[in-house]
Image 1 (tube, helix red, strand yellow):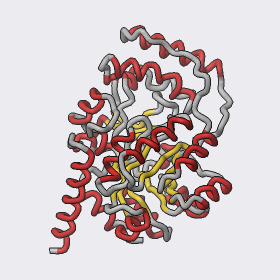
Image 2 (spheres, helix red, strand yellow):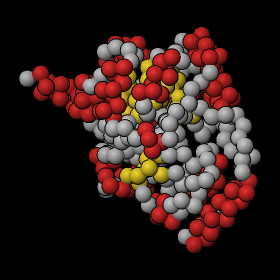
Image 3 (spheres, helix red, strand yellow):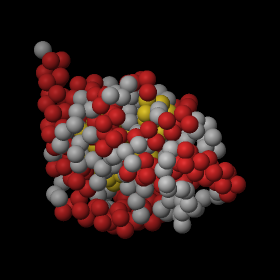
Length: 356
């Protein structure tokens, strides 16, 4: 499917999707991108069902354009090694004490919202698009989306994962290259074995699959959107590019750090959440490089949450999970609608240059 074809299918003007970055995509950002002709996405992986409904209502209140909701596919319940939890809490509390932060870890009521309840809320909200990472949704859930005419996007980091999503009935697959910031969507492989550069991944997937592909990873300008399209993508999904928009809820110190981020500082990190994610290597990562990696997501993510909130309040970016893609320093702080317009101007300019 061409870029124009996918845009028409989604009811948007531009082959541009704002990534569903959990915790950093408030309704104002989602609506601003959608109102500007792209596809805004609510990253709802951390949200309780009622919060999903509330934020979806806020997005609809800011405009009537199509938008997406993105979720992490997780089991409803988790088997947790409480001995490992106790050890991790000791290490985290000791780190916070050394760094002068008064907050300490605690055991949450639940390690994460129940995915089945989140999914039910998504269906009730009825966005134009639903996207999923970390695994597949089941056949019943796919039928529920189809019944509501919700477009299904699955996240893949390899051709094998993409093919699995195709076999499961996805309408499109988001190919997440190694350059992408935030959590890796890998679900069939060890994450270290699925760090494939975006352009190689797109070419391989385009040769193997007949389904719309969405490019994600390191794209920061309109020329990058066009390059991905030439290699077979029907749209590009950008996350880091939107982090410094005023509508984005990322901590201000995080936004400031992105302006001077060096490409060699972007690393794959497990010690914040228990799942491989791409972001800036900082003091937290260096202080606890391996000590917490025995605890999986979402258990470790829940334990580090108090530290991350306290670090943001204290403007301690060196203790934050500063997720970002490989080209983070190319961010351009400006309102989201202006960024969408700028990206598409660059896209058209690159297209004309290529044709001349």
